[in-house]
Image (tube, rainbow, N blue to C red; front, side, top):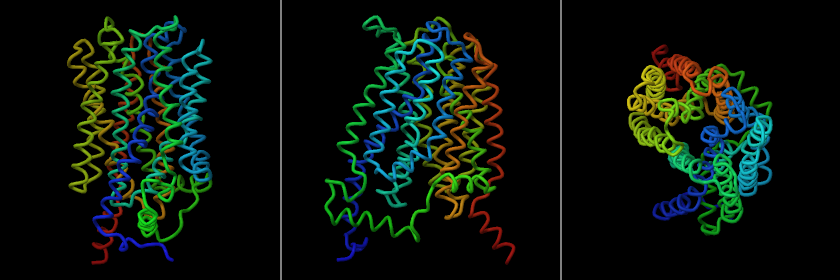
Length: 443
């Protein structure tokens, strides 16, 4: 008996199957990415008191924050290869459990050196989660629904920062159990749930539609057949050789470098927002800083959705990417100029959040449209890998040029990086534009 085709399942049944997948798969995917992003950035709130207790300077904090990304990039491709070998359920659970354990252990470091080494281990543990989740979604959603699934997953970033900001400040001020400082509990209390989540993934998340207990065999076969029908050839390998070949592609390299500079703005803002807010008013408690840190991300989350919808509705990608990044650069520059007026600085910080979050969805849509079918699979992975290096560059440079009381000088680096990204994106040509130009030439 052959594999059922999409026509073997009625439209009503198809809709019901997709609904089941949304309800049973996406909540776990979202939780994984929320805790992933929160646990890689919770050091930004811990540093408010950790630095003084352990003698960690702004430069040391920048190094500890950024070193994570070097390890993350190095192990990203091997991790994705392991996911294909062992299956998504086992490997995603492994990633979550190990990074949760490493985050908890981070709560017991006694020196800057130990912190740096633990951050390297955290990068190794988390490596491959984001591209692994992207790969996982391709096993469950056709192109029609995959974009919506990825857009929903992107919402995990602002949600993680809202939850991390809100709880981080409260923990610092109000949790000192067993004579352990509040910053230690930030790592312990935000890392421990991830360990439990990893075991939940092991128990609840099926690797493939055929493994899903909530789908009948007929429904699972339809999902698998529908997805396979979109590909005219088997998936190509995505190893180091293919990645290096993609990086040599001028189109991929242009997009990747532009996103590297955009990521400098994103991660520079993300890791140093608590220090920026503290500089606005040194009398702010950690709880105040945490509550105020929620505001930019809440505004950014709402506008992120609106920008993504506008881009999808109009089909325009480049301006929807360049505009938010330009707004982020203006917001950071404005923040520096009005540090003596906290309420106005918060307005500018909200602009930064809108920019660094709002560009994400239209950028990835732009990248997909700019690459050919053959370039997309490895090209997008290469772009993501190079962009992650922005997570190393920005915190490191900002930390090297900051002091415990003043981070403003270092912020000029992400401002410049954002401007460079905008300029580079202005020269990106999509396949649609190339096709139009060819038609005009041959007309």
